[in-house]
Length: 291
Ligand SMILES: [Zn+2]
Image 1 (cartoon, rainbow, N blue to C red):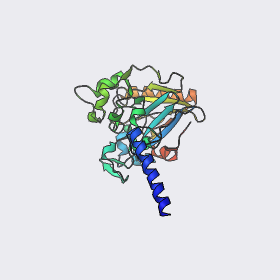
Image 2 (spheres, helix red, strand yellow; image 1 turned 45 degrees about the horizontal axis):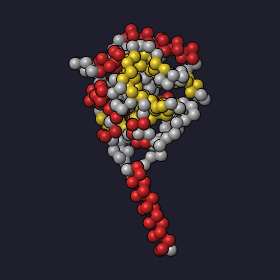
Image 3 (spheres, rainbow, N blue to C red; image 1 turned 90 degrees about the horizontal axis):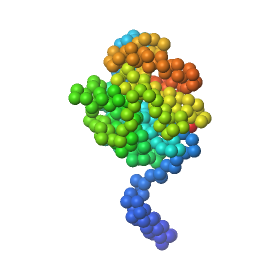
Image 4 (cartoon, rainbow, N blue to C red; image 1 turned 60 degrees about the horizontal axis):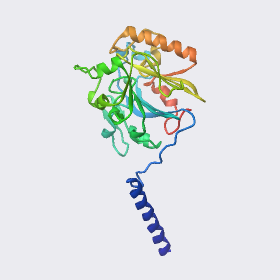
């Protein structure tokens, strides 16, 4: 018994040292590297909540909004030809706790790091080919610097504002500064078909910020989904002309909303408001996925 145990122990030590020698990574840290899927997958990550918001900031009375708290989420799109991360959370992973106990910064509270949620799927930031931010507000950019090795998909007016001498309001330039030197694909309002087959398309939806953008996905089983970013914050805004008090350009926002509502009507796409907590609670979260 003792002999058998020590033999097993020996052999596991040998396997471990071979793994470290081959990969430079201790076995407990080694992640099974994800294989490309046959069709496009959408993973939804949990990046926490925003609490204590006043609906008046959105021109609503308290009783007019069903759920005032917002979720912070981000998405990984895995295409047979590559990967795209869309938004990166509100609290940087470095500020979160290893035991996943809640951390609060201002109105943001989060438990799970973005990179740990990626790692659970078999991806590290270096495996991500493209990064897109719906816009530059701080609740979408917390971990953007981690993805500076990817190609950044950004609208010209958004990038101009992000790196202007007078940085924009509600932005934390330090959180995305590394993107300044990233390989960058600049968009000027035209659609961008990320993988060339029409399944993952970046669309301009300016107004909330100078170059706010959304993502239209065509999934084989689920059908089309529009990841709408902050085109709206609450379901109750749809069908009204109410925009947040901190909107960059109200007229642009209303025009973008009209265009996106027409698009969802034409394509039959579901419109997912990124901060919609009630909708988020119903969604499959990573490691589950939509395909
Ligand atoms: Zn937001």
